[in-house]
Structure formats: C-alpha cells, structure tokens
Image (cartoon, rainbow, N blue to C red):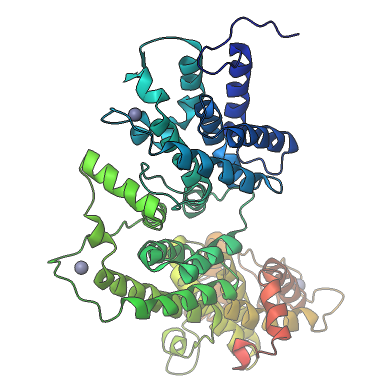
Length: 509
Ligand SMILES: [Zn+2]
Ligand SMILES: [Zn+2]
Ligand SMILES: [Zn+2]
C-alpha cells in the first residue's frame, strides 16, 4: 500500500509516485538493450500518452524527462507503436514549448551530454520534490522553463532518430556507440561471444555502401580498420573480402579528382580499434559534432575538415583496395609455387634437404614460408621417388602445423588432395621394419630427416631409424590422416559455395 507523503505543488503528482516513476524510467535506461519488453512498452507508452494529453502543460517537463530517460530503449526495438507514439508526443511538446517567451540567457539542456543521462532521474526528483533554488548549479526556473523542456524533448528525439533535430548538444548515435564496443573487442582479438565476425565485418562494408555523402569518409575509415583484420587470415570466408572490395570500389569515385589546400594531412590511427573508433565518430553529424567538441575542449586531433578531406580519403581508399585485392588473391586465389623450385631444389633436381629441414622446424620464424612450402611439397608429391615422397609428406605435415593463423584456402585444397590420396593408398597389415617410426620433433627430426634423405652427406642423430621406417606406408597413412583431419572443415562453407556457384577450384584454374 502506498502512503502519500506529499503533493508536488508545480505538477500535482504525488512525490512518491514521481520517485517510483523516475526509478522505473532509469531502470529502462539501464536495460535499454532489452527489446520488445512489454512492461517497458506499457511504461513508455503511458508516459508518452500523458505528455501528448497536455504537451504545453505544467507537467510536461516530467513526462519529457521520462521519455528522454527511456529514449535509448525506444531507439532500439520496442514493441509495435511505441516509437511512433513517443515521437509524436515529443514533437508536440517541442512545438508547444520551444517558442515560449523567457528571459533566460541559456538553459541546462544546452550542456546536457550523453554521459549525463544517468543523472536525469536524480535531477527530476530534485526538481519535483524539493524547493532548492539551484539544481546541479543551474537556477531552478531555468530547469523548469518551457524552453528547457522543449530542449530535452529534442534531445530525446535525437536519441531515437539521430540527426532529426538541431539545437541540441551533439551525441554519437547509439548504434555507432555499440559498434565501437563490438569492433574494439573484435579488433583487439577478443570478439564478444555473440559477435558473428564475418557478418560484423560485412555490415561495415554495407554501411559504407549505404552512407550519406557527409558520412562516407567516416565509414571508409571504419572499413580501413576492419580490413586489416579481414586480410590477416583470421577470416576464412571469401565473400567477406569481396564485400569490402566492392564497397571501397564504389566509394572511390566519390573522392577522386578532389583537390584541397591542405599542406599536409593528419596520419590516421595505426591500430584497428583506434581507427574504428575514430571512423565511427566521423560517420554521423552527431559524432562529428562530438569530435569537434572534444577537440575544442581538450585540444587534441586535427581539424575535422582535414580528417575527412576527400584528397586524403582517395589515398586511403586506394591503399585499402590494393591491400584487400592483393590479400584476397593470396588467401583465396590461385597460388603459384613455381618460385619455390629455385629455393628447395638443387641443380641436379634433388631436394635442398638442409634448407627444408631448417624451414620446417617448429618456430614462428618459419610461418612466412609454411604455406608456400607446404603447397609446393604437396604438388610435387605425385612425381617424386620413394625417399623424396617421405620427405615431402613430412614437409606438408609440419608446414600445416606452422602455418599461422591457418593455411589459406588454395593451400588447404592443394594439400588435402595429396593427403587424402596418401591416406587412401593400400597399406600392409603390419610394418615391414623392426624399429619404431621416426619422432617428428626436436633434434631427432631436425637431424634425422637429412640423414635419412642423404646419409652420405649428413651424420645420423642418436635416434637412428631405418630407411624402411621413414618410408613405411603405414607411417605415411597415419601422418596423412592426422594432418588431413586438422585441415578438414576449415573452409567447409566456401567449398559448398564454390560448388553451388559452379566455380572451379583455384587449383584447377
Ligand atoms: Zn527560459
Ligand atoms: Zn586535404
Ligand atoms: Zn611402419
């Protein structure tokens, strides 16, 4: 049971009810990620109905602040009709109140930044419940002035429908703020568990594609940031790179043939998370307003017109495009390994066994050679003799372990073809040698393999295995099976897509 302790003189709303309302509204603000919450919908619609009933009345400030507090929920995914109801009530209040005469030089809404949203509930309670002369350092009558209420109505409109009003402090749209958090985590290498990485990156390409002219430079910078990740080898879906390439290709002509009088341009952030954050900030009128405000207040950063200068953007677009195309080719296109002959074969056609043994040592220094060496070995396998085959198969096995973050599609396809053939070859029920199979690590492998391949040139290691153990078909099959298992499934989707679209595999190209 509610005990009425007092009635606010200005509003006629009892103060307990107001306390409760402000807490409820603030609760919705904190849980704005919730969507289609019917209880929230009822509360917000009730607030909107009360404002709409008397948009120019004495209680308008209460309901307007309520709609401002809950605006981040309304902006997302409320139930049907909520958004329209709220927008109509806010527009009515703004229309009824914005031109009321007053003597104030300024109003509190003009200083209301998004980080102060959290204090609105407390301010409302102070305004309604107490009779203090000042609230948060501003005179009470400025707070209660109809023009101030109109200002908060516009702030709420700007939260729900970014860019739809003027004369409010700039704020970054909620979607972009959320994207900053999502991309920052992803580009730091720790994506949030619910992030669909391919979709998230592709959606940034789409945002560039759909951008308003003034937002295009910011969106391009976001694409620049996600492109580094997309070409790192962490993305195994070719269509993601296609989307990025296409979006930048379409954006480029908008920046071409521009000129400017800037002596030099600022250097854009060199890290993915920073570049994404700046790009998102530059992607909306509100965000650019925030950029300018922070720059003026804190004195960092280049002038806005330089960070979005079309001459600089043309350079950025071309750089991004070159890198994307080059890496798309390396990751998904045909991979030429003919250059490896000169590196890994001697003039007499025998293997440069010492060099190969060195490059398949398990070390991050060897990541740079792994993909090409592995694919080269797999392609050569078919026409090699018995001893060489044993070396080539172990080379494939080792390089696929070293490859980082994982071998690209053409390498996987080429290597899997060889591995599956080896695994499927007939093998005897028992080994034809008495000793164990070779150890595939440490000095036993590093020195053992060269000795096996060219015993006359390389001394044996302490662990010495017979040539029959190295060339044993049962050993080969086990190695091939293990390696194939590690690779199968990496690109399942692409293989299916490739088949659906009737594309020939890159190795058949
Ligand atoms: Zn006023
Ligand atoms: Zn310029
Ligand atoms: Zn064996």
